[in-house]
Image 1 (cartoon, one colour):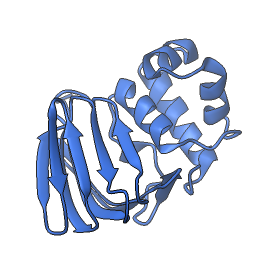
Image 2 (cartoon, rainbow, N blue to C red; image 1 turned 135 degrees about the horizontal axis):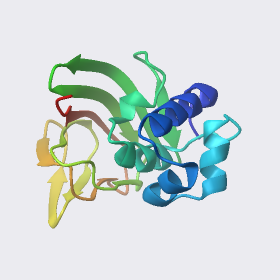
Image 3 (cartoon, helix red, strand yellow; image 1 turned 135 degrees about the vertical axis):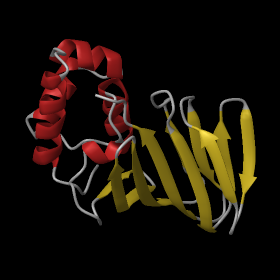
Image 4 (cartoon, rainbow, N blue to C red; image 1 turned 180 degrees about the horizontal axis):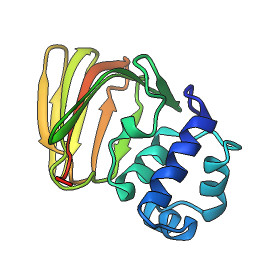
Length: 177
């Protein structure tokens, strides 16, 4: 479930899909979701989950911020996970997204590979857990910083006894036009 406006998210997905010349079926197949689900997202009849937004953003070649409400404080939530947008900086050559990420105790947030060149950083504010990227698994705790190429599947896991709170920075290169 998301706290961001589902009608606005759906409209942004539709505009981006059509601008890329993708049919509803083609985007649904690339994102690994049902065509009916994508149609309901685009019309605002279904609330997108964080997993669905990431799944759709990747084949569209856009950062998550391109799909969310375009204001700081916009939040999207799944079971046990809340990502709140802190800031988005759009510069020539890249988009930098900053989120406050909260995972309930024992929760995992898995992400598919982002487009080539995307990099993520995580700075742990509270709690402990693990970051998995590719074949690497790194234990994390308060004050730790992890930086990795996010063009491979990756995951964040909160420890079993306490929530994990971290700043998540995602840098997406913007291809030249």
